[in-house]
Image (cartoon, rainbow over all chains, first blue to last red; front, side, top):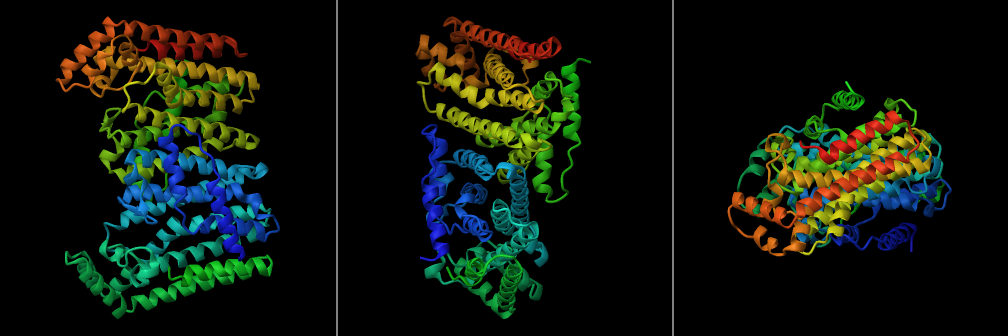
Length: 318
Length: 318
């Protein structure tokens, strides 16, 4: 089994081993349920790889890895309430399985729990690690707010969109690498480089997610193909296509049948070459991430793991 | 002007002076709105008094005082969403003035903001102060969950109720005193004593709040008298009365007219002597708080301020 799978298995077993107070079960059961939902465990994997890359046993940063994964799942839990989503990773969302109050309160507790893990055993690095974590968290809320704001605007620019996904998605990956590297006492310039690598990787990851939402293989994607089109979501594809043919907004906001809309909008993504532009952007961000990675002072083995993750994020078809 | 008013004015002006990023305004305006809502500023006042009691200028703990007040307002903001409350301190709640997603997200940001303030300038005390804060926060979520759980049970005992208000209300007052004292390098036994004082004070405060909800002066209470009865809330009054006459649950859960119900239930609170028992409990907790206060090694001036707050919480009629 390769290192990445070994680390992700380790994270899963450590998450399963977290013990919670028995009462009030209405608070703790939804947290356990949320964390047992699986997912790629990309963020804690990045964190542990970053720690190991600088010569420390990756287990040293386990509390921080759990903290970052709990934080990520907290954002998903609250986002699902805000978006009125019914399903997450094939299971009912917490506010559907329990109720909204439970989802809000359990999420709040997860944010505090994440903060507790982030500083656990951090010793004299406590203030620094916490500061990195809190600034990341504020960025993520700003990103989520911009994402919600964009719903009501047809004039979102590509730069505004890229800034939003950087805040909402990428900085969390950047923070994971930063904290992992800090825990291993990495030199500050390398911490910064690894962080930038992860941020570009995150943008590629999110653009790829947008791409797959329309052009993914239904048998492997896991979500309904065309969901973004049905929700008229301002993705890179839509923004680029609209710049070339603004009539796509009329089409995507019309009340024609969903399947018909998906087919017609997809066709416009292709005819305007928005899809080619989007694929090019994904490649560019992935290459930028790999270039930055090359400049980090870590061993070839470590680089190979990060490179594998960058490739997975930018060419993945699931 | 006395010290308590001077400190509370200082807190108000410092809260008003907090600057927020201009964008996304959908995230920051609700935070500003929430914090401008006023209130007694009891928690930051306790924190600053605790700092000053041990010989440090109270301004030294200003970031922590702001952190504790932001945390308190975050819990009110999310509680209002969970309770579907329309008004808070005479103004529309955030989820009514904006929407639910905004209320959830702004609250999340307030929790992170509070954490940032709690550790600001804490230096080598960072890990300790943060640990106290995070453990308090978990207690508060547990208290809120028990409070919600109680809605569906008619067999809540007085001890269960007292434990719930200790978690939901008192530990935050205890935490305020604890952090203020820690910031002033108070000896650990005194930190503990001050914390216990604040916890008993908090129980008296919440029992008084329950009492006033039924027996307060409508012209000064600020809320609708009888709200707890209309909502069949398990308060100390109801639990004690039910122990003596269980038929009160039938009455309070019946669908008779609100005013009629308030009158009939209030009469039972009096006839069962639940109201006398409740007043006695308030006095007992207030006296216990004053006894503990007497054992803390601080000056008479400082003690006088705390005593004044304990009295305000236990005999206040607003």
